[in-house]
Image (tube, rainbow, N blue to C red):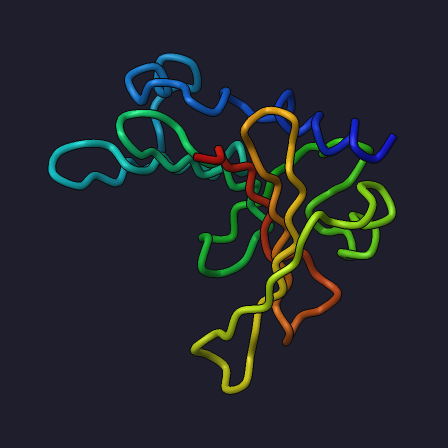
Length: 151
């Protein structure tokens, strides 16, 4: 059952991974902010929907379900995620629902001193990955959930 819940993130996403960037605002309306590089969109911020979309090569490659941290402008994904998870839930609840991740990685953060982020990855049947991030200084809080297309 947990694998099915992880796969359900593909259906929870507001747009499908791989969507051409020209379709994003047609489907979701005007973004609060569009980031560009070389006059091409590379990011769409939808704080009211609680998501940020990242683009590469003119297609959506990742969707962040926001958890309300300051660096994300305080936006929060308002709904329930697969299995009834909410972004404010303790990370342990995600593991209860989704099972053990396929792999984990710990990365150092520049601030605060000695801080790190634990990343947990679930590989989906589609060429995609779900990543759950938790900061060492806030271990009881999901920092972010990201659905990303695998190369």
